[in-house]
Length: 145
Image (cartoon, rainbow, N blue to C red; front, side, top):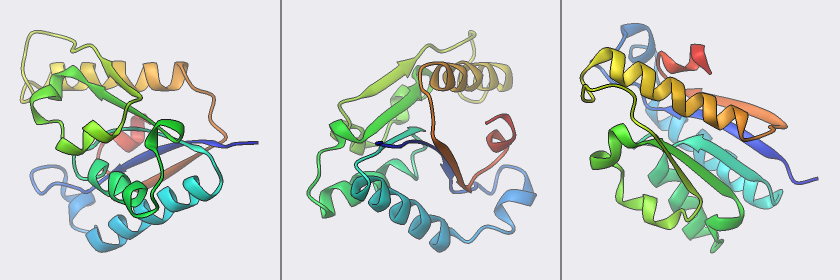
């Protein structure tokens, strides 16, 4: 069976809750994401995640290093709220699901940000049946996920 794995990962930002960034080991987060990606490729599985801007380049790099096509192994979810900030590496992921922005505010509007992320997460979990989940690094969103 080809596993479908949910990944919750990000590199904590200093402008967020101190509990996340004060204990973070960014090198370990990077290495864990890359190791998980390599294992997904070896197992012929599928990685499903919300494309945090610090994580998508790492996933893309592993697929390039291993000369594998992301189409068979990655489903990338993102909210259109962040469309202007999508990393350039998104171009390597043909299976992108862009969820709707919720609300009238921008990225800095707390309710718009929370509601848009909630919708993206809801859609991600409703559209996929996961064999496992891996949590690496992270911020407040890990509690919802």
